[in-house]
Each structure stands twice: as structure tokens, then as C-alpha cells.
Length: 128
Image 1 (spheres, rainbow, N blue to C red):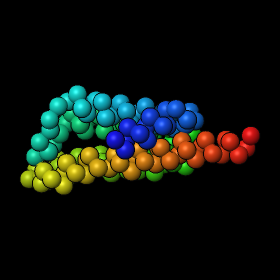
Image 2 (image 1 turned 120 degrees about the horizontal axis):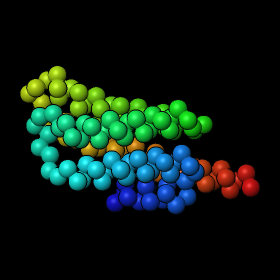
Image 3 (image 1 turned 30 degrees about the vertical axis):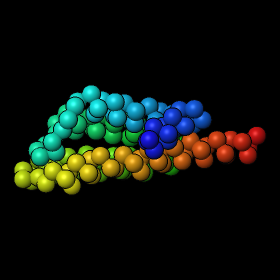
């Protein structure tokens, strides 16, 4: 519920970088959902590819934007990619921490994107 509310709000009131970030996050959620059930007992290659694509999208926003939030979002997404990589290094991966870190890193990402949209709207309203 929280991710959907944040991303929906961002699409409605955010600036161009915020909306782009929201659509990238939505792509990540939908693409991961279409994969189906993952066990997190071994390297999840398909989820890794999606997470790398999302990382590239956030990174592109960070490079092209004059906002600061994309750097934080990109950093959190990079941590998510590193979580996948550790499962390649340590073959006997513990499923629970791997899955939790991969999934729950999206919460601060969408929260920050939503907050940045509200912040953008407030700044725009004050400046007018």
C-alpha cells in the first residue's frame, strides 16, 4: 500500500525527475512481479537483471537531474545489486536475509521518491 501511494502521488504531483524515478520503480515492481515466485536460496538472475536495469535508470536521473534525492535512491539500489552479487560469492546463501534485503530496500527508495515529489510541489507553490 505504501509503495503504491508514494508512486501514485509522485506521478500526479512530481516534477520530471520525480515522475521518471516513479516510473522506473513501477517498472521494477511490475517486472519482478511477472517473474513469479522466487525462493531466494540461490542467485536470482532474473531479479538481478531487473535490479541492474533499475539501477541504470536511477543513475541516469542522478546524472541528468539537478536534484539531490536521485543520489540516495541510486545508492540504495546499488546496495540491492550488491546483495545479489554476494549470493554469487557465497553459494550457501541464507534465503531470509537475501530476500529481505532485496525486497525491503525498495521501501526507502519509494518513500524518498514520494517525499521528493511533495517537496517539489511545495517549493513550486512557494515560488509562485
